[in-house]
Image (spheres, rainbow, N blue to C red):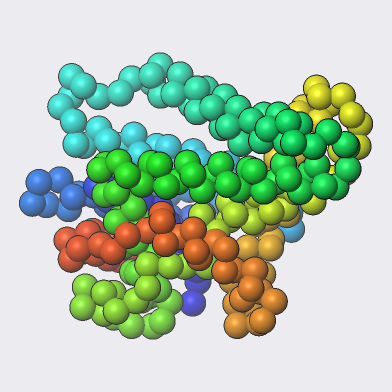
Length: 275
């Protein structure tokens, strides 16, 4: 059975299988869908390590398009987001992420510890994880985000139901957990952990050197983390990989919420469409 994956969008769920993507959302009393056929990747882009970076770029683009489309379906035409607004939002989001998850923990660590060694990188990494958790907890208090987290839970339940070989029905899907080892949340936790190790190789003391390479090495960290996530999912019954999966699953208890039956219907609709 081929792996499927997806993400939550505004009032709906995106599902991906091989080179096919389907986005299904609830609009009024109906479920509407949008289908996307992806171009086949070259053999180079499927190589070990490279495929993780490629997959991240793909999902960022597809995910953004899906979010914009799903948001547009919920708003009047005159209020729809323009391409300029989307571009500015992307730039702002990137700058915000660098400030909060790269620069802030670096300078906070310098307040506590000034030596340039592995302890500095460990403290820097721990602070990065704590900031991420606080950020997730903060946005989970927003009503609109709570709805997205419920659809995230619906996506996982339906994927778990499919991978268990059960019929895709609301009754069957309800029995499964909202947690999944291939989730993007788990991937981000692995990224944060791997960054501690990779950043330990940045030995020059100058602040611009350390921060610059923290940004430049992000694709390297993504490539490594993707391969670890695949192994952790493949060997999840192994004691070591089971332990490796735990932190991501714990954080998923924040980023996924129990969905209602209508949300499960949307997730099932999306997965059936993409299959």
